[in-house]
Length: 165
Image 1 (cartoon, helix red, strand yellow):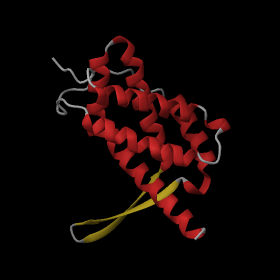
Image 2 (cartoon, rainbow, N blue to C red; image 1 turned 180 degrees about the vertical axis):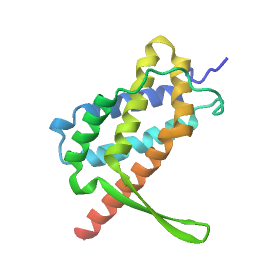
Image 3 (cartoon, rainbow, N blue to C red; image 1 turned 90 degrees about the horizontal axis):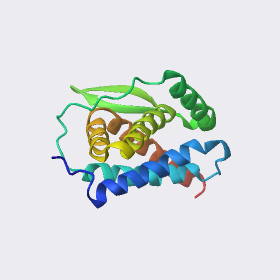
């Protein structure tokens, strides 16, 4: 039996997921420090999800199909709010050749939001299933969005600090 949800780490992840979803849901009236709040929450989410124990090779529990309208609505709202801070470039070395990929903080936040939200919906009915969904989904999909968002938010903070120093 998977006891992933009967420990402080999984309860911490649920708490962070609620805070994250609350922050994203309330972005219409977001203050100027919402990116700093987001950055802090992502670090806490990251720490909590990597502490979840259990199999990461198991099948994901059945999930409802994606609600593309809701995803696009959130993505569009975030993109407008972020403006020029949304887009970022990633450079990596692949077989000795530098390659560039682009990313979108709005896309990262949207994917993380819907993964965490789905887990919170499962939480009431089946806490183990929720923890399993978060853990496996992190390793297969939204973990990369989390790392990319953390990296981009760090770069935004560093570039802002340089401008004001």
